[in-house]
Amino acid sequence: MLDLVDVGKRSLEAYRGVAPDAQLDELHRLAGRLRGARCLHVNATPYGGGVSEILRSLVPLYNDLGLVADWKIIRGDEAFFQVTKRIHNGLQGSPGELTEAEKATYLGNSQINAGYCDDDYDFIIIHDPQPAALAALCPRANARWLWRCHIDTSHPNPFFWEFLEPFLRAYDAAIFTLADFIPPQLPISRVLLHPPAIDPLSPKNQPLPVQLAKHVLEWIGVRLSRPLITQVSRFDPWKDPLGVIAAYRRVRPHVPDLQLALAGSLALDDPEAWEVYEEIRAVTAGDPLIHVLTNLVGVGNIEVNAFQSLSNVVVQKSLREGFGLVVSEALWKGTPVVGGRAGGIPMQLPDDIGGVLVDTVDECAEAVLRLLRQPEEARVLGRRGKEHVREHFLMSRLLLDDLRLLEDLVQQRPLAPRDIVPTTPSPVTSVEAHP
Ligand code: UDP
Image 1: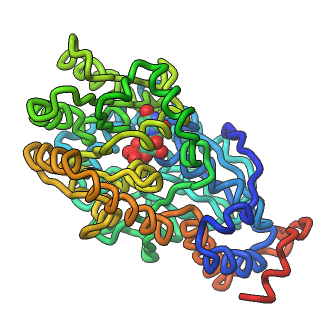
Image 2 (image 1 turned 60 degrees about the vertical axis):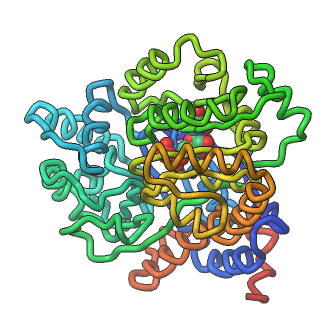
């Protein structure tokens, strides 16, 4: 068996009053037709990064709606994750080529994981390139295979794309964040667009009492008597942490007591993060106003929540970005965001909503300075950003996108009767009568 990730129990009804009612009602209506459908989500890591963040919320909600959903992760050694990080970067356009040894590492590891795929599911949703070969290596008669690609594959390096493409032929559908990300020559005819979403009820996104938030940040050395800008991100060159530091240093002469926090997690499947982390430490050494913090020194959900809630401005200066959940997370707390014009960030920051889009270090510095000097403008942008997130980027919307697709696939090919397991009707089935 692949390793099962333990998830909590959640109730969709808890989102009533937070997420739009229309989304919740539609979800109950759709779920009636999918009750008992068995769904498996597979990715590479149970923590660190946006995909695990989403699955931790999404999978329990599938179960609450009467589907039978699991989240499992593939296994892999360091060599495998080195290769998958190179594939990730190559698919986002980095130069280079995979060696034959690297291809063998990917294939060998995928075959081992395929050997663990011994469960029978109606839908298997594979996230990102790390487990992508599974569909080709462990076909199941009853399963519909979906490839959920979270990264920007609009201009993949052809060497990497040609390697991955044959594995993708086994999929029934592909899901991307943006139409722009659909790679040329995708061998999957059915393609859908489901932008990611945040969970407003997760510990990271629930409102924190201000005193507690202040205490949490002061505990780790942030001084709240001084202004603060923050970037919360994996330590990754695409997130441009060095660009953030450069922009901060351009603002600092105008706001001498300004602090910068760079909070980053070091994920299991991301060996490159350590190198970036060391680089950041080297260029920030000796500056007491720059806080470089990681999950290893205790920066978890509550700390991220406090940073996103109390920063004057959140920065996400990505050069390439799949979606950038951190943008919606900050907006949900009413905090304005200065974001790189990359991937999914512009859809979260449309004109005059949420913050400012930037292309360069200079523009980033200018936008940060403007928002620090104009707190009223910053507040209005943040408030509009929150409403934009409520409508478009909460988990209920993503769940709805997913269930619509599953329902459509079931209409084309009904679930085999033996697949439909009786489940206790959820207490909210009556909502079906009021679609
Ligand atoms: N994150 C975190 N701690 C960190 C850095 C990131 O909890 O130190 C979380 C962040 O809050 C967000 C996710 O990891 O929920 C990152 O998702 P995003 O889509 O922004 O970027 P990805 O890492 O998937 O490229």
